[in-house]
Length: 179
Image 1 (spheres, rainbow, N blue to C red):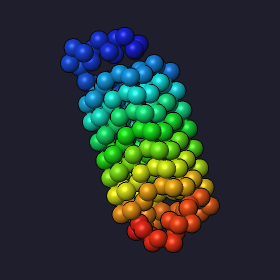
Image 2: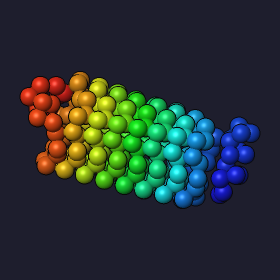
Image 3: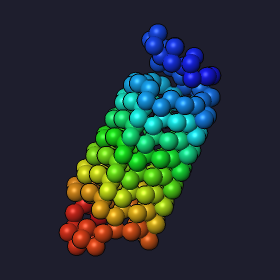
């Protein structure tokens, strides 16, 4: 499927684009709230500044996709592959990222307040300055992740693997978050 067809169908009210082949698609700045992209291939797609609020990206392939500055509030990314994706400065509050692969993903300065990242693979992820307040990272794998200056007040980190993670010393002393 090409971008023009997707945007035309979306504009006419179609929201079901499950299993769509959109690798390397340029959807920069598109307004696609509520879209169904379950099992879609969006690897290396340009989704910078795209509005995906309320979208379904369950089991979607988003490897090395650019979602920087995207608005993805209450999006379901369960089981999606976001390995190496750029999500810097994105708005992901209350997003569902359960079991999501975020290995080496860039989540710096992202808003993840209230997001569910239970069981997510965040190995070597960049979470510098990310807002994780109230997020659920139960059982998440954060080995070698960079959490420098991340806000983790009221964050559930029970069962999370933080081996080798870079965490601000002040954060460790403060006792915030649930370990």
